[in-house]
Image 1 (tube, rainbow, N blue to C red):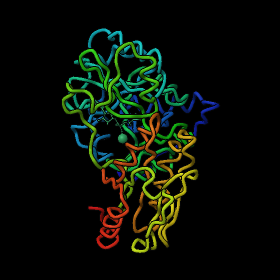
Image 2: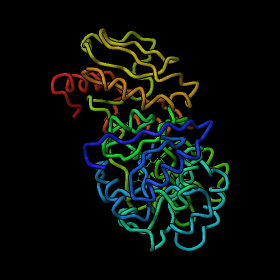
Image 3: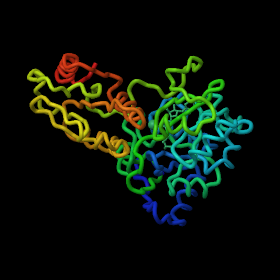
Image 4: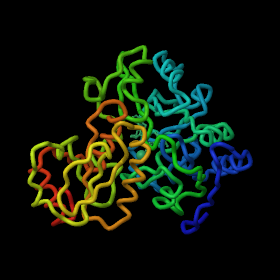
Length: 365
Ligand code: TXA
Ligand code: MG
């Protein structure tokens, strides 16, 4: 396929997975092509994890730095031997038993046969077994592991539909498997092992609380692990819209005392919040609900789609309100914070300064 052709789109319904179409996607992957496919979290841009040329095309397609490693997708424990070194440690085994197939990614020592380009030169590899029926059917049909980062341009909002993939990557994919919106809407949780502890590198669909219930070893947040040296994938700006975006600490505009918001009046600012926590807003601001805080699953499901929809309209700036809650709220707040280039304000006067900056310069910083 040349650089200007549109990708082939295969429509595979999750409730009725057509084996002929799965074979078609698997054949393309075996031939070294790039196939975007749905997982239960977000769409991934897949390739044969052992094909160095295909892997380098994935990095180029995404505009992703070569030092940022890819997640390798397997169809279960049996396929792990091909990508990890040595036997699976017992704590990892317990967590894989509890959460696979599903949205938990485990970082383990990598097998020397795996091309180092997949892991950005690291001695570890991130692996997960997706539960989406289409993703698992494709990996099973291939019979080899599939490296697949989220199918978006680097730093941009992750894709939760085939339309998002086409908008971001278009001709850079050979095939896009369209199975509609993804169920969970946020990425997998990434964990690693440091000494005797498990450490969450990226909050995701599996919550800290759920991990702690099933883990035979303590599960720490990244900031609480004294021994964790730097890990990739922690840019301050990620999952970001094109419009200037800033984050507001939970509840900043929710108060019983009257706030003077006159100086913040402006057209074209969109406030992204929750329908069960409607704030006072300055004149001219538009309110967009991500759903209800009482249903964080719904918020996660709609988060990226809502940000993409807003970003496709002419807006002068986006203000996103953090949930400020635990559970899935940690992953939602991580994504909202990084969508806002880690610019979080928590007072009306800081909000005033930040909004004035983006209204006058078109930038948040
Ligand atoms: O839900 C998901 O995880 C989706 C679907 C497609 O599986 N994939 C995804 O991949 O979000 P990606 O590449 O967008 O994010 C992978 C994250 C990055 O933050 C990367 O730095 C981290 O995992 N990662 C990958 N390999 C790693 C490793 N060896 N050590 C530490 N972090 C790693
Ligand atoms: Mg990503």
